[in-house]
Length: 431
Image (cartoon, rainbow, N blue to C red):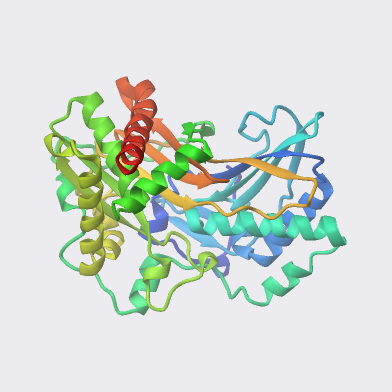
């Protein structure tokens, strides 16, 4: 981290709890694609510069006070850091050799070129100011700008976009307050949480950060045919794909862990569920948390389990407890926490990733989600037993895994076996 010089007039605001939980590790969430064809590095650099100009939150800064509370600052008075371009192996997602410091700016672009017309492009954005929906929007704009620059030599779209971007994205807490929604009695996480006891390490001493660390999930990609079968199974039984995948995850974890009960926690994007709705780039972390718990004995029927998961989510949305979860975050994260959800299965499903715009001679043939901790420190929140990432890109359902303990190596194969068996069984039944 660099020594950041700032004045009180530089302060945009103190970050809210939904944003604070990503400050301690300086967590950047990365969207990464491999590219086939000749990539114009200069045009990509121009596109990134246009993205920074259009979305000034990307060149804002985050500093911490004496209590390690994150504070959002206006952009500094030096030129923003541009795209990093180097030669290397595009099959790897690397930790950039250059410093990714939230005290300098909040987004970085890493471009790795290879001689055989292959490349990897990774956009890192600080998770305190950009969640999945926001990151995908930023990544899509980057490729819009790049394509326009290659095809016309200018980026007129960026100039038009800049007139529509008003200020900086805000927190979910602020958006809820504007709509008259305050903290209620229920967090929605009661079924998966436990109170902390005296022995739990609530107080966390200020500690020196460790070197940067990259988390690249191990993943399995279903081919388009297998993906279509999963979608058909969900439609045939009137359940969501998210419910079906979550059910497969819980069945697999119950089977391999031998646990009597299994619980999961997963984010729910509230942008379209708020009234009025919120644009992707207008909010920082606009996801509430949903929770589901079940006895392992009740996971035998995959479709019925998916239906129960969907019903639970529907009821929680109707009762307004999904948005309540974020208003209770201080009870679950940070040094003042009094509850823990440790040991849960975490699952993030970002849905269908859009096909990014690209020039005719360029193919963006793969897409990954990675995480980079720029200065990790001991955590002040609950740890999941295993984390799954789910998304569909170019018609291929992808399931990624982080962690998992002794059964980590078997988890993905077991989840996919649950999904594909169900899909094949449905196909046979309808034949």
